[in-house]
Length: 204
Image (cartoon, rainbow, N blue to C red):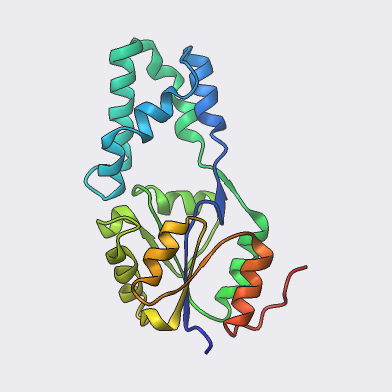
């Protein structure tokens, strides 16, 4: 059966994070390596931003406040590289995305703050539907996140495919009837879509 729509994860597929901005900020501020990860992503406030209870800017301001409290106010002036780093797009996957959209609508479902739309514009990546966990008010692996995305795309889950590089999220997507697959690279991704009925040339 040919799928009627495709839902995909963002990071690890269409964008990669190398944390160069965080490392540069830590070096400039004289912070130990990994400090930003602990103060930003490991802190409970990141979950609040990820489900829309804080904006991306409110969360980042909180990170700066905590760092300034513990390491001194001068830290604030060195955080720009961290905030300016929006990851690196994957050109082959972005090119493939345009070909897929010629056949079926594609939605992106990403566990992230409300910065997702700005990040997509920054990288020039276009989806037919964009769902950050912040906009949905729920994050993966909750089945409700997948169900909401499918509903808003206007397609029944059992007519859609979903692709993610996180096995737990793939399992959760399958629980609501999505034809979910683990992302292992562009070639396997393309083969999966060909098997799902899309007339795409297989990559070698």
